[in-house]
Image (cartoon, rainbow, N blue to C red):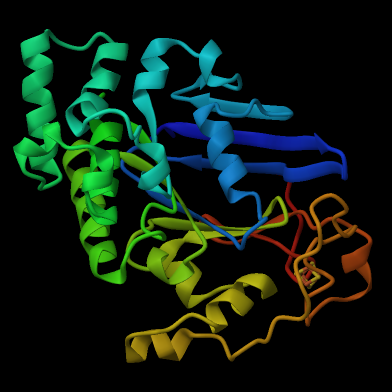
Length: 322
Ligand code: SF4
């Protein structure tokens, strides 16, 4: 199957008064139609910058972003309208992503108007359909965002993202600002929509445990680089990278099977270094319990340790180009 999204050697730097922030520093991955890739990392890992570069909020410093084989490595204003319609995003905080001066009906109709989809009557029916899809009452079209709860607002944000029938949706921590009780409902909805519409999701999160039941593949980012990328089952059962093991050792498990494969508790050493002045060699070496001499000198290249299981660490095998 051809990938819907290909990220090739992507780099995004920001020049600031403190120096150059290397937010994303040469990463590559792809995403298949109907697939969820979980892009996981701590704050400052570069996962959100990656998402905003894919959606076109930022232009890449270098590298390529291909959507269905077409180069879209430009800001969103320069992208063809058909591509803007095909790629949508759901932000973390629906409180700020929904315009407070518009009604829910206007918010849901706007992308249809922008993309000249349907007559006025067709748009009205589509808005009602979108509200039904996310299980909100039709009379919500008259309400303002502040009259809704946080979970309901996020459902509106999801409905808005689906209005133009996209093929790829970027989910930027879509549940992290919500109560636990509503998180499961939103996740189940997203999974159902993916099955019905064959949507590809790039799911940005700091919550690794959430990816166990949501992602088909998981990629871990640390200080602007990917450390490990693997099919989800393989990722949780056979993690290789010391940073992945550290993250996995601290997440809760709910079954005996999960307990069996959970790494021993690994306590993190120190803080994440600044992306303005990242450590040389392996970026994780200042916190890694398994580091050796080469780790602070050479950037690890990618090694394929299993089918589709990629690790960037000097501890493992023969080096391959990527
Ligand atoms: Fe640790 Fe070295 Fe592997 Fe980096 S390359 S994760 S420092 S062992």
